[in-house]
Amino acid sequence: MKCSKASSALNARDRSDRSQARVDGADSQLAFTLQRLLLLLAQQLIPIGVTPSYFESLATHAFVRAAAQISRCRNGRVNSSRVAVLTSLRRAEVKRLLTANLHLEADSLNRQPRTQRVLAGWRTDPRYLDRSGAPRRLPMQGRSRSFASLVKTFAGDVPPRAVLDELRRLRAVRDSGNCVELANERTSPRRRLVRSIQGLMEILLGDLQAATQGSTESSAHLRRIALKAADLIDLKVMQERASIGADEFLEGLRHSLELPTVPTRRNKRKMKHQLVVTILVAARPAKHLSGKP
Image (cartoon, rainbow, N blue to C red; front, side, top):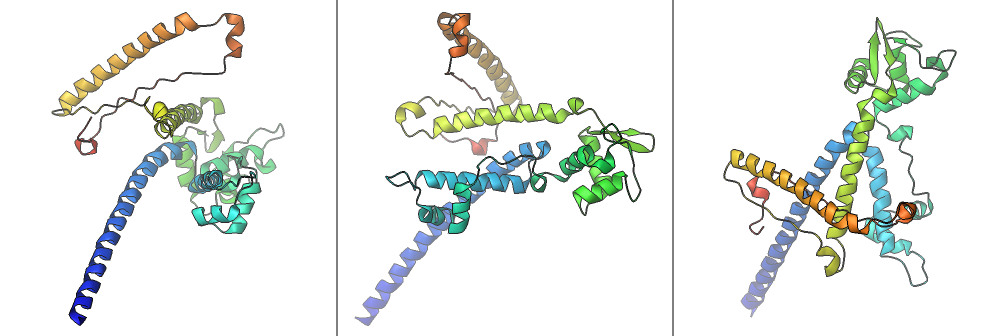
């Protein structure tokens, strides 16, 4: 009898260990996938000045809002205790976030990258402005009104040379003899980069919303194929042909759908709906392709 009980206990422990191993494996795979996603996202966000602190604030607000949507009572109130359970935040923090203004200022100094802090200080601090209120040309060194003092005031414990190199890369400053001065903001490539990434985010947002709709009818609008290439040359040819085909398809689709339904000019301003069709042509390693296209 004792041997039977011991054997049952061992079998139960073995089953429990296997179950826990499956859970741990799923968690590890999820963490790996999220890391890949966040890495790609960070590579796009860093060049336009999004810092980990700012991203964390946005993410925290987003998680609280999402948890609040599924924690709403019949009377319309949000069960903040359940939100705290779902997000692992303290209840006081949950209440503060639920009642706070969800619009976060992108130019808040404590969330800006150091380069943007320096530029903001250069444009606003009276010590670095001339009599007309324009940013001064600054010598590199000096206790006051120098680029070194500007960096120390607004960027903290980083070498001025490192900040200057990054500002030069961004084409936000230009050299003027032994001094540096601000470049024309309109010539900065950052604006174009922000618009480009904003467009990319809108595409990803639309695709994600389409893919996560609850109804089968909505999610059925998402189409995807994965084609395997024999080698890199074959992949290049397929990619070029797919791009050309995508352009031709979209132009034909626009022509077939838009022309018969375009309203008169006077009614165009009243249009409140939009159909967006996106075709993504991407080359990926074979290991990321599923067995079924």
